[in-house]
Length: 383
Image 1 (cartoon, helix red, strand yellow):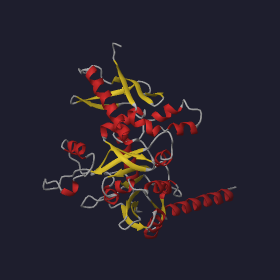
Image 2 (cartoon, one colour; image 1 turned 180 degrees about the vertical axis):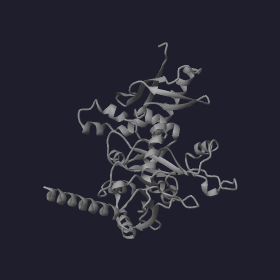
Image 3 (tube, helix red, strand yellow; image 1 turned 90 degrees about the vertical axis):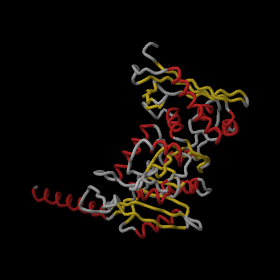
Image 4 (spheres, helix red, strand yellow; image 1 turned 135 degrees about the vertical axis):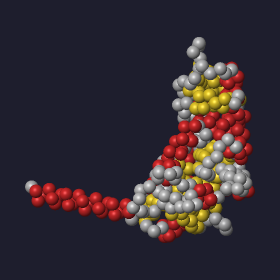
């Protein structure tokens, strides 16, 4: 019996050592950036953790993470670029732990984007719960700014960062699977997070020209930057909207918050009103309804919210007017682009017996001109 136990223990130890060796022989891809290369093709950038005896990543004197290798390659297409990244990698490339894919806006708006998303989603071993964002400027530049905060791993830091941004409502919850499946949906269009390299102050107090984000969110970010100082350059705020697999527009932070509210993605959220930030709590689901009579279409939004701190002395009627106006503005912004990210189409399609009937109804032609009726109510202690 003792000999049998010893043999089993030895086999277990050998198996464990073998698995450990296999893990150490992997180069786990954590962040991937994708740009259009000059002259055509794809430029792929990546961050891969270095294997060392210290599980805590350190930083060099310039504040750059020394725990991660940064690499960049070009290829005629996505598969060739990925293969070349594997060639220059010090170990076998493994995308199973990929946390973030960054698409440049130039690439996301191009005619190559739909096929790229398909190939990305079908990458062997790639986890479709990977986050996807579109960045202003080059994805390679954005990827190079991503680094862990002190005392955390990059993978943990990225997860925590997105949960923080999502919890505030200023970025979507969408993942690669959402982008992939919804780009072919007849009911809803996808949106993913939008990102820029935020304005950074140099040591002399001068702001570099390169740090100015040429973005639809520039004014919003500049206003925020005046209220805080940070050496973390990444800013995830707003949403990139897609139609037929290509990016077609942007929602700013406030509009994205309204989109998340209508998609019932928030248990509570902070809303800026009259220079005061109030916490609002949705009471039940926000309901979307579509009334259609021939070509006339009306989009209706109903829901109830409550104040987290009812003792605050605010004008509740003015608050509601402001919130309803913001929700209308967010919906109008998507109507102008012909993109339904909220799910109105799904509500409208319930009255059709078959998908063919629904497709023939041509929702995309009707959605931009639909009338709006938004009525969010505020529950009070006196209600």
